[in-house]
Length: 345
Image 1 (cartoon, helix red, strand yellow):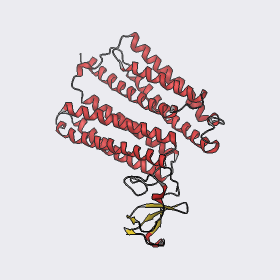
Image 2: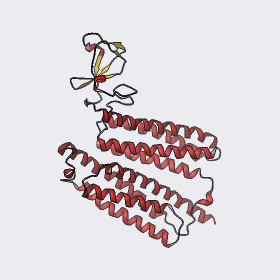
Image 3: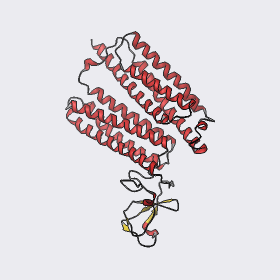
Image 4: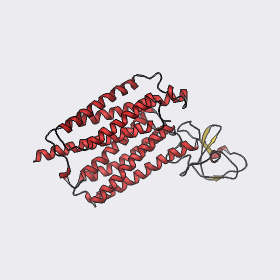
C-alpha cells in the first residue's frame, strides 16, 4: 500500500508542476481571460472553437448558463430554451462578474487546457488522500497532510476563479502562484514522510539547516518579486505592443532593480551552501540539482534582459524558479532528518 501511495504522490506532484507550467504558458500568451467564467468556459464544459458559437442565431438550442457576446457584452441564458426568429431579452441577463467580452480561440483553449491539468491534479490528490486512510495508524501526519492537500487544491481552484473574476488582478495572481508552491511543499513533505528507508537520509555532523532554510526563504521572496516584475512587463506590453520587445523593460521601477539585485543574493547564498556541503563531504546530492536549476534560471533572466525576451524564456524562467523552490524545500527536509539521525546515534 505504501509503495502505491508514494507512486500516486509522485504523480500528483508532477501534475501540480504541469499546472504551474500551463499557468506560465497562459501568462506568456496573455490567455488568462480566455474563459471569462469559471469553472465552465463561456458556459460550456467544452469551450467554443469559433466566434459564431458565441453569437445569437435563430432556431438554436440554448442551455441555462450559456454565454453569448452581444454588442461587446456578455449575456447569460437564464433558462433552457430554443431561440426563435427574433432576439428575446427576457431570456438573457448581463454577466456581472466583469465586463471583459472578447473571444480568441487560441487564448480560450490554452486557458481551458490549464484548467484540465488543474482538474487532473485535483483528482490525483483526491486519490492520494483516499490511499492515505489505511496509513492513518502508522503515520497520522501523512494522512492529515494528504487530506489537507485536497482542501488546498480546492482553495487553489477558488483562487483561480477570483483571478478570472478580477480580470487578472496582480495581487491575486501572486497569491495564486504562492499557493501552488505551498501545495508543492506539502506533497514533497508527504513523499519524504512516507519514505520507507530512513537510513537513506544523509548523515551530517554539520548543521546546515539554518542556511538551507534561509536560501529557501530568499528564493520564495525572489519568486514573489518576480511576479511583480512580470506584471510590470504585462502592463508595458499593453502600452507598446507584443512586437516591441525591446521596449518592454523601458522605464522600469524599483521592483525590477530589487529583483535583479536579490538574484545576486540568491546565487551567493546557494554557492556558499554548496561549498559548505562539498567541503565537509556531506551527502546532500540535491545541491547539484539546486546549482543546475539556479544556473539555468540566471541564464534565462539574462536572456530576457539582454536578448529582448526570446521565445518561451518567460514561462521557462518561472518554471525553473518553482522547480528550484521544490528541490530546496526537499533539501530542508533532508537537513532536518539528518540532524535527527545524527543526534540519535
